[in-house]
Structure formats: C-alpha cells, structure tokens
Image 1 (spheres, one colour):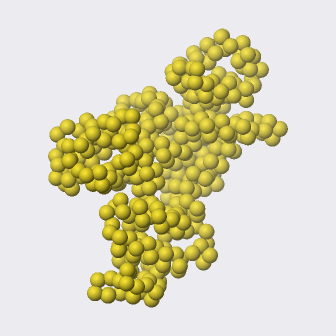
Image 2: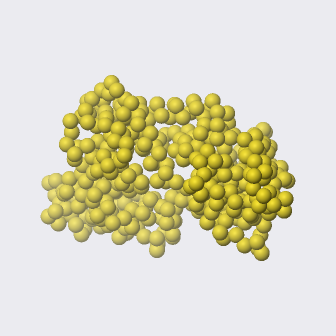
Image 3: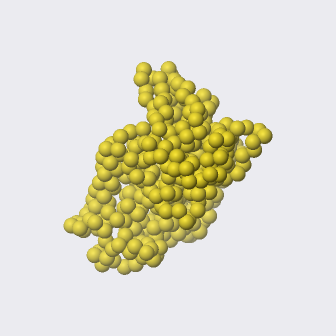
Amino acid sequence: MNSFRIDSLPPRTTVIEKFSSFYMFQEENQVLTFNSIPDPQLVNHFKLCQKHDTEFNKYCVEKNIALILKHFLENYQNDSHSPKEKLFFRNHVVAFLEEPRYKAAKDRFSTYKNFESPQNTWEEYVYIGGCLGGNIEKISNMFKRYNSDRYDLETHFQLEIASYIRDKFHDSTGQGKYSLWYNLKKASKTKLRRGLEYLGIGEADISRYLTARDCLFDVYSNKKFGSRWLEPNAAKFQEATDYYNRHYCNTDSLKLLKNHPLDSQTLKTWIEHCIKVLQLSSGILSSFSYDDAINKPNETETLWLESFNLSRHDKNLVINNINTVLLNEIEKFDALDRTILKLSSFGMKQNQIATQIGINQGTVSRHRQRSERQLLKAAAAWCQTDLEISLNETSALEEYIQAWVQYYYQQTRL
C-alpha cells in the first residue's frame, strides 16, 4: 500500500482543451496514470461560442483564460439562457477545474495520507474537489479573489481548491470545531430538548440527559485535552458519572428509580441520545418536519402517511423515524454509491456522472437503482415491523425517499 504513486497530469495545451476535456485515470501496479479526453459536445459548443460571439473569440485568440472563465461563469448565472445552455456553460467551468483540482488533490496527498490505505485518502481528496462543480457560487467567489499579479489563474485555483480540500477533510475527520463532541458542548438546551421530544423521550428523562451532558463537559474540556475534541474515554465518562452522583443524584427532578446512583454506562447512553439529536438535526430533521412537508408544493411526498390514520404528533414521529432509518441505511453505502447519489441530487445526468468519476454510464445506472431499492426496502421494512403496516403501494414512499435524498445531500452540500 505504501508504494501507491500518482503520476503527473498530461498538460492541456490549447484553450479549447482546458475548457472542453476531462481527465480519466486508471491504476496499474499501484501507479495512477491520467489521460485527457475531450468531450465532443463541449468542443462543439465552445466552437459555436467562438463563431457567434466576436468578443469571446477575441479572448480565445489572446488565450485570456481568466476572461474566458468569467464569460462562462456569468452566462451560467444568467437566467435568460435555457437550462440546456446553462448546463453547457457550467460544464465548461467544471472542465477548466479538472487540472487545478487534481493538482490540488496531489498537493494535499503529498502533505498527508493514510499509509494504511493511501488510495482511500486520494479518492476522498478528488471527490471533495470534484464536488465543487456543483457549487458555481463558491467557484465564483474563488474567482473574485484572483490576483493576476501573484499567480496565473490555474495556480490560483489550485491553491484555493487545496485549501478547500484541507478544510473539508478536517470536517470529515470530525476534529476541532467540526468535532461532534465540540458541537454537543455548544448545542443549546432548547435545540437538544426539542430533538429529544421528537425521539419520544419523556420530560423527566430529558432533564437527566441534559444534566448528564453538562456534567460531561464540566470534566472534559479542550483546555486539558487540546483543541481536537476527540471522543472522551471511559475514565472521563466515569468522572462525569461521579460528578452527576455527587451534585445531582439527590435532586428531586433528577432522582433515579429506587434512588440508585447513576452508573457510567447509563450516562453514556444518555449522552448518545443527545448525539443522535445532533446527527438528525444536521439538515434532516429540520428539513423534514411534518409541518414543512405538508406545505411543500408536491404534497405527494407525504401522501403515503395518510393511510396510517395517525395524529399530527404521531406523523411527526413517523417522519423522524423514517428519516433515521434512511440515514442509517445511507451510511452503509460505499463511497461510489454515495458519490453517485450525491451528484444525482445536484441534477447531473448519468452520462455526466460517468464522465465526472471515470466509469461507464451503465455502472452509474446499476449503482443508483440498487441504492434506491435498498433505501425503499429499509423504509418499507420499518413500516411493517414498527407500524405493523404492509405497503402494497410504494410509489408515494419512493417519491418521499427521492426528496429525502435530495434534501440530505443539498443540506450537506460541499
């Protein structure tokens, strides 16, 4: 594994290559090599732009890469163009970013990689950089920071994307300000209380859970353990338990059954319930409360609930439980399945996804269908087991799941 090596990128020398070609890579004997492949549709569209826009053609003759990129960014953001035309402008921008993003990923790879699985580190860097293609606003902001006196445009984007990959990678490792434990410490009691209520926790237990959270962070802080906010060890949970028993065990509203002292495993379980609230509230619970769902233009997304004859409160609980099932299921997917679902949620077509990640369109289609079947199967199984309702008609539930996937990825959009 330690011999995994990334070859140099073949240069794209012409202007049209820079804005109309994509890199394909293959691994052989733990060496990653690249080829630059032109996209025929983008090549034709680029030539049409040259033919019909004299000013744009002037940029091309002068090889003014910055003005060409600006042209595509502005035209993509111009709503007078058709969706098809805007897609061409966007894809020219994505094509331009190919060289900077791979070089940025290689820079980060040379700085840090997991020596146990360097390919995984590389794939994550490339994936993070690639997802920028779905965020034209962020690309535009990077472009606004360009200073031609310091770097050429491609070097500017290489440095910008490398910084972006670094921040997002730190986010995914869950340390520092991105740590779940740091966010648990900072979470308001109102937010946690509301989430615990959604999970069906009673008021007495909610008070105990929130007090347990406070006790944990009375004994666990970044002042003693640095700024990474790693998961507390068993000794810290025991220390927090002792703190709870010493200061709160005799409080009327916090007393346990038969006045037994709290044990560390129970406190840890309470903390895990609070963590679950944070995980569900990160763009999922908040986006899919029943009140929000019934006000959406397409009400068929929640019509599958109507046959259950439930109260509004119970419908809230069903929605939240279904979301939990879907979240747990989607976290089981491998990197390729998650990437295909995410790019699909951004509106990319199967052939575009295939080009973006270097596989054929049939593979994209099979993986997407399999992922959607797994999500539907998990949701239907929960309905049958927990609601004791067998779904004979699943089309409405399928629509809800499709909306959930879109919300899930767009709320966590890079």
